[in-house]
Length: 126
Image 1 (cartoon, rainbow, N blue to C red):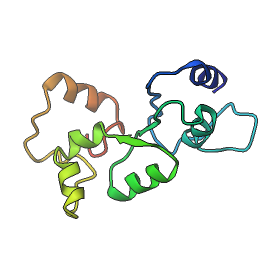
Image 2 (cartoon, rainbow, N blue to C red; image 1 turned 120 degrees about the vertical axis):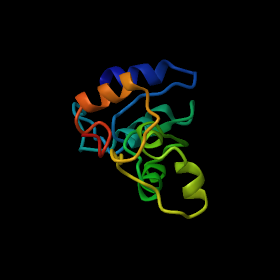
Image 3 (cartoon, one colour; image 1 turned 45 degrees about the vertical axis):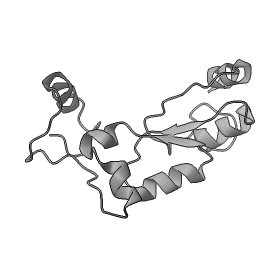
Image 4 (cartoon, rainbow, N blue to C red; image 1 turned 90 degrees about the vertical axis):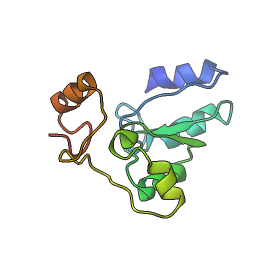
């Protein structure tokens, strides 16, 4: 995390740091175990927008990610599972949170191969 702090202290541009899971805690931080987004929010002091990303599969996950202090949220794997995630959440409709391998997916074959190789990267992919 020390490199991350240095990076954000000197940066005046909008950038991102992917955590894999917005709930991730600092691993090499000398203080108490704390959420990385909360730490970065404190370090950057509003100089750049902070985008929360990683493992936001449900509306509850999104609320929890915003509560960490992220200014915006980014969705990635979630949109592979549920392409209409944003519209469904906005309409109060339930969303799929794991890939349904029995339905026709429009995911390009090279990406599907990678998803299958990385077990657990996209929930439901077998």
